[in-house]
Amino acid sequence: MTLAPPFATATETAAAASTRVRDRLDGPDREARVIASGPHAVYLQDAGGVLAVLGRYAAAVPCGLRTQVEQLPPTDAAVIGGGHCLLGNLDVVVRRVVDTRVPSLGPIAANAWPCDTDLEAATCELPADALQRLGEGDAGAVGDLLGRGSGLTPTGDDVLAGWLVTAGATGLDHAGVASAVAVHAPSRTTAISAALLHAAVRGEAIPQLRILLLALRSGTAVPQALRRLLAVGHTSGAGLALGVRLALHQAPPRRHP
Image (cartoon, rainbow, N blue to C red):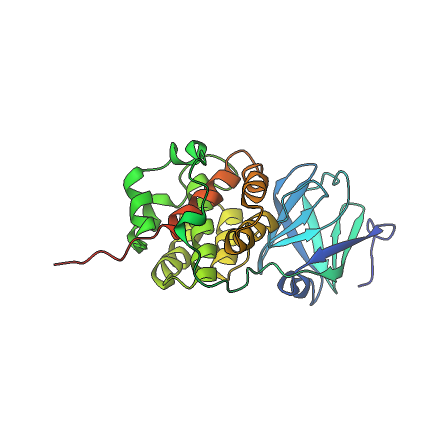
């Protein structure tokens, strides 16, 4: 990429990202608009979708470029192309590839889940009937959860993401829920949340969720992994954890007369 003012003096900043995110930086230069920003994370959108530039204290979302920057520069636009993301005075380049996917784990016993876990922060914001139906793998629950609840990623979306990642990793039939999310998320929730839901459909997750599922499978260090997940965001960690619990306790599909 040929840097033009005001980027000619940009500081190269190394990032870690998935191959999908790294490849998003290829191609000709194009502008991406800022759709949400703060000192620790800036979310961008262009024709290819949503991309995040993350500081060292941000949640490592699958669509993100993970940097060690203490505080990101305020800006209302960025330039993507040629393997670079130019954000303010930062020239972000992927120097390390990370795997954001949760591997296939096989079945996880429902009793692996800590029975005393308090997820009231998530359950109180969502319809109980919709949560029950999602726990049964009912795709009809998607419409009642998408966009519901508080946060940059609404709590209902976090629950769906946790359920999708867990169902995919443990071999549950999740095609119906995944299809409903793919169809309805773009119009029923925020662009950022829709991008994270699409990542969940592909089995991609933040490290804290990945670590929890691996801990549940091995039966070791589950309380510690769960505490780290619950510490994510205001309600995001609790929402993701609730989705995991619903998937692990999934009942047989309803029989219709």
